[in-house]
Amino acid sequence: MISARILGKTLQDLHNITGSLLTLVNRNGETVFTCAGKSSDRTASVHSFIESAADTMYVGNDFYLKVTDNDRIEYVVIASGENAEMSGRIAVSELQSILTVSHERSDRNHFMQNVLMDNMLPVDLRDEARRLKIHNDVIRTVFLAETSEIDNAPALQILKAMYTTSGSTSFVCSLDATHIAIVVEGNDLEKQAFTIADTLNTEAMISVRVACGEPTDQLAHLSQCYKEAQLAMEVGRIFLPDRHVLSYAKLGIGRLIYQLPLNLCKVFLNETFEHDVFSELDDETLLTIRNFFENDLNISETARQLFIHRNTLVYRLEKLQKTTGLDIRKFDEAMTFKIAMMVYDYVQHMEEKEG
Image (cartoon, rainbow, N blue to C red; front, side, top):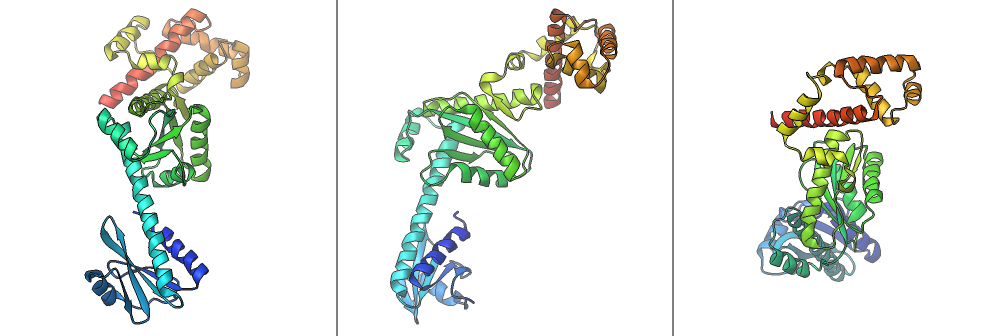
């Protein structure tokens, strides 16, 4: 439902133009907004007016008008002062337009949510898109935002302000308490994803991860794009925990490992190591390994970044070799160990998820 603040601002603007005193009362007789100072109790007169068949009526010097929402009387506008009847009719016309646009936007978002969830038959999708004037053959991308907050309401409000202004062709759909889908025209993926993440991080201080699927020029294919964004989010959670923006097109070997059967991954680990070596590695060793890989197996640069002597790094790598049986100073064995680390992370994640 449209917020009372927006309805009240509309009446305040009209009051500033016409000088008429305007009050908005809900169907329970409660004052939602008034620019007439202290509002008198009009509960009885409002209830009587709502029950009547008249759309407008005078009650003393006040002009009452009904405002409907989905064929149900939701509000009563009370106008008084100079040109009360004209101002009241303009106010009702403005409020009805706002409520209509709000419902149309809600219908469009509900439609897009069904498209993403693949809940519509192709023929129904085409007919509904035509009714809502949503073009079919436009390039669109689905972005999936995952917030760290239990309630995504603040993030949802910011994203709607960013993407669903008047005339916008974008969609923002709340999927659950922590996930929001954003459907945007165009194929500038990384720029849009970083914009979403940076805006939520800076404006709302919300930690967020953003994933995107491949662009598509067919509405019916947006459900596949959404699944790709979901996969990118999941793969990133396992293999790229420090990355806040994830693209389905750039998942690398993580995508391949994620689709391997769990038992095959365990076979690989058992073939590579005689025992569970990863449980024996402390945080210092793991940090050393990750830095060594990030620096392309360069001993001098890794030692410099870790603020340790080159010989100390060599000692750690030799100690690792004794534990694992792999000398990661050699390219082939480094690749084996890197893949094994990713496979191990995947196995741990899946076992925690299933257990």
